[in-house]
Image (tube, chains in turn brown, cyan):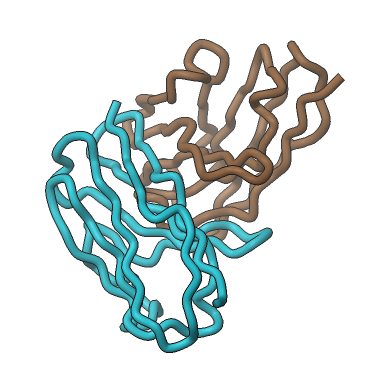
Length: 113
Length: 107
């Protein structure tokens, strides 16, 4: 059974940085695409970023240059480094495998002073 | 970027009703589209991939159709557990984009 677990969320001040982790079990992340999707309170889903099997990354326009993806294959983990956070980044962040076939439970990021 | 326009944004229906949700893409995406169901406080769940392939374990009352720019999700006989919000997602090109969502409520 595939399981994805996100950690690293919390309360952070505007302008701050946070790193989210997505740890997988039951699947090898390096053999899969891995996306981050976020959902602001009361809003719809927004695809944020993806790392593919070659390590190439894609980002939505609103986070490009501020967010970056990396992976540690030995830990079967993908990281989302988020810098220069604004209140607009407040959301539940989900990681999801492949064409979003499997999802984690999400981790809440709150950007507030 | 490809824009996904989903309609309606909400609908009220009764148990047993047949409902249809539509997603229109701003340019052709072939069949690179998925449908997702989300219940309050939960992660989304994929129902359909490549426009019409039902995921394992998803009831057959759900179906998807379409290609190119117009796609539909149909629930043939709404059940109590189907009251949720539904989203389409295009993964033809980056950035991937979701529709705005359709909230299905009990009439």
